[in-house]
Image 1 (cartoon, rainbow, N blue to C red):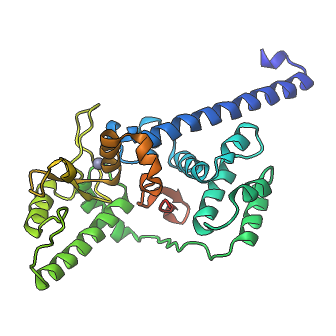
Image 2 (cartoon, helix red, strand yellow):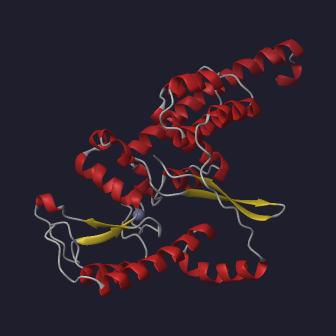
Length: 303
Ligand SMILES: [Zn+2]
């Protein structure tokens, strides 16, 4: 019974528990790292590790974001995991290091980690700011007025469980797609000799079929992937194995489903050797309700 412990025993006890807690956090990171490596989250109908953390593991958006950032930081500087395990580095600092690395690729990673170990959040911020050679990545924060939020909610009904920002991104993607489509129509109609070239008619037919949504299916739930961002054309039966560029063989997949398909085809190890290809190019984000309205926090794109 905790209430029967002396003050001294209480403090000694919590020190032991915190030590155990840090070991468990490091273990959780090990699991998440392997799940990310194999892209298993795709099979569970979640197109990214972030969404797997929120939907399947029931982490809050902020909790998931900090873990995903930590996993990315560990990929760049594996020493971070050991520092988390021994308690000299917390997840908030690891996430800050991730943002710093992305903007300062040429710095000595291990040295940076050593510099911020055991420091407070404010100290970490100041240290990283003083070491940064580049300005921070661009970020736009907008507060939407009520009438725009209502319009967004109306449009959002067609987008399943997409967040407001995902809906905005989809609409912008659709607009860009239309511009490029019109441009392609105006310019050359010559076909490329590249075997991987997908003719315009095929792309149009696949776009119509996919209806701006990933065509991947989860083998666990049997449900179609709900992702509408970062959609890419994929040769279901690879060209190298005799596949062609017909509409039957082309499908539209989100980055996660595309990566999972590649892991299944060539294995996680080979995918890891490809390096940057295993990191999502997409912008992850989560919504925060603040006292000044809806605000989005970003996990910037991977390296
Ligand atoms: Zn997908």
